[in-house]
Image (tube, rainbow, N blue to C red; front, side):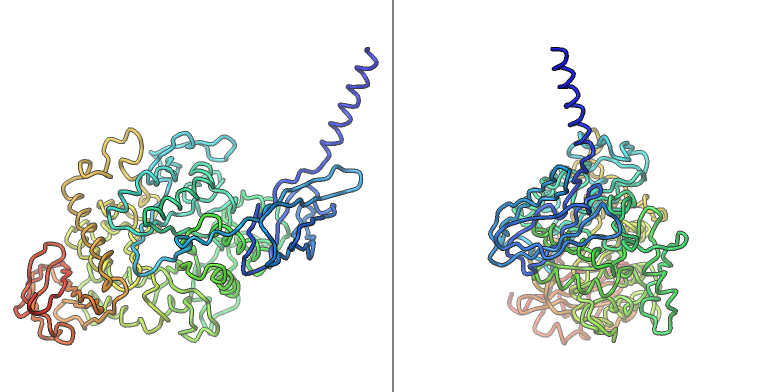
Length: 620
């Protein structure tokens, strides 16, 4: 009996030793794919200890393994597959074999595509975008605040640089609030995994491109969130980061090859000068540092000229659209990306999802610089970027100048007029996203020095101007904060956490002035939602005179007149000059107050005030 026991233990130990030496198949990405994609090619990235020493086999009707790519790091294989149009949904085994070792197997699934009409709809100038940071909006599931095994496990709401616990469930709990406000589209800063040791809340240092950060939720919850939005008539934008990745991600800690990221002899930051990309007289060194320099020591700069990097990123983004059905992409730090790759990326994404919207972040210093990055080769760039629109920072700056500056030939309200007059540089300026603030800059209410009249005027300009308007969470309740550092503009939305003393999601939790702000934004936003003239209508503007700026939004259904008085004191406006647009109308209705206005008489406009007036014809 004792001998049998010894033999049993020996073989048990031997078996355990053999299998302990078997390399683990850590991951295959994309984890699954779909039949019926326009591009039949798929490249799988396989990661596992010494996986390159194995032979790869698969057999499935309509699927061909065309090439097994071995790279510098033996822990990687890149598998090129061709998925025929005849391939059917189903699963098949991918085996990784090696003589003398146990086989490794991965069951790969090909799914059927979902062609529902409310998926990948696109975000257009018919919409109003609400930008929020999920960590700072609402905590719907306190159980996921700290996740064991992640590098940052603490929650500290007293620190602007720590995690606060907001999550996707919290956002889902307040979709009714956003719908009531007049919002049609929600944009979260990245909800993807950021397993970094510090400031991991912001989401821009991705460590796993295929995984929702568990402190925000799961992939399944994210998909459910998108579906709930769609069921409520809301759209969803996903925030993407091409340019860099968190240094704790597996492809960075154990890189497939040295050229996976941009390497420098010593740590080199980007010079952050977008002009270096477009300067016809610029040096190659400046351009290289702009494009290849790192954003931060914890953000490795991806080498987007590497075809393996290209496939990895492009397929990941297509995967998320098909998986979750998001309606648009916002592209972080767009000018820092490889231009040729980004044009190719856009073509491939548009081929799969023709209606999906794409806009790039371009915090640059002139209209020409913005237009340089947009599609159509409109400013003689030399090639088509395929980028439909940008975040219109020049519009943001000019609105701030119109509200705060003193009138001059190119200053004050004249700067706003001038920026709009330069729309000829774009293929279509209405695809630009117009905004007053965001998570990287001072909050709008602070920009106007907490002047409530300026605040209302700015909101009126935002919601009546051409393009796609975007608000930042809390703008509607006068949240304030000055950037530098950024954290000071990323405060929690009061009422989003259990135990909060006040709940500003409700009228009872807001001050009288906060309710006035909320009601004003809601009135204009919901008016815009039902007024096609403010969505897709034409724009006609008039050169400002005496500090008064007038423009019209109009179509065959309605004409809306916007009057902004940039002066500190009240002015009277004679409307005779605007006969080109007012001809046939004799009165108007102030959208905020419902007061009737006689267009044949001078209109009194208080200082620092914008009036939004729907014109009415004779006899109405």
